[in-house]
Image (cartoon, rainbow over all chains, first blue to last red; front, top):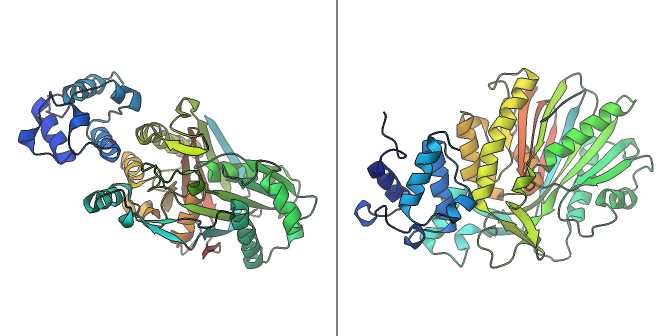
Length: 85
Length: 325
């Protein structure tokens, strides 16, 4: 199976670090994304749009409101990229 | 889905109007310089046209646009059969702006007038309404005027950092007649579950950027593909795809979903921002160059959540202009 950001946590973290302009060694799946220094409404939208570009998964504002950590985002896109959209 | 075809419609001219006053997103005081640059990069919007005077209404723009259009097309007021205004920012809620314009500008009492309450999809909805109505008139060379646009900045709170860098004020006035042999095709859709993506509360516009992105990506590419299938036309046929100018993130995501070349999807975001229902005709005025008649696909999407696309055959002799007012 080809490794993508929805089935490989390391790729997901690299992708997230790049998109949110955070050094790779400064983030982990346990990070609460709203506490990240570069998290803002604009960067959230950019991040969601890039996830869509990479995985074809759309995350709604209601879904995002229920998530806390980067691991929660990873689990959601893994779940939805398996056809559960 | 509401797929529709009409025949014999010709867009004869478009006059777009923008305020002369320019606001620069690079001077937004609540952001640091890197954040301003990031905002411009991701939204694609540098400059916004903003009405300065509080007593200026969208009706003032429509009046100037109509007078300019009639003069350029050499159309007499008595020759206008239909006048429709599309806006969500009327200076008064009644009577309809189109009825006021009929009286103020002295159009014939035989002119059909009404308003349509739609935002970013409004130009295409208005064009479809005019096309269907012109088809229904038992008259050769019937003429119609469509006015669309909003003074959106009057709905934006000074400290709303989400909507303020996005929206501009503008209007477009379009002259349409039924003197063509070519078919026009439309796909008009609504998903009211997205009514809270953009809405008005306490006199101000609220916008949920993530939901607008999601509804746009879910609905617009399919709306366009279904329209092309209905018209039995190939995706390569239109010379241009003129999308509503929402922001660069949304417009680029739609373009990539449809695998369209950048040269086919012109943008006016950098200079004019999001100008609601005027954005498609404004972008056409800025970018349409054709050596010969050609097909163009319009797609408007936004508040509602409302989506409408049209596949139209444009003449090369169309009058297009942008006026600062």
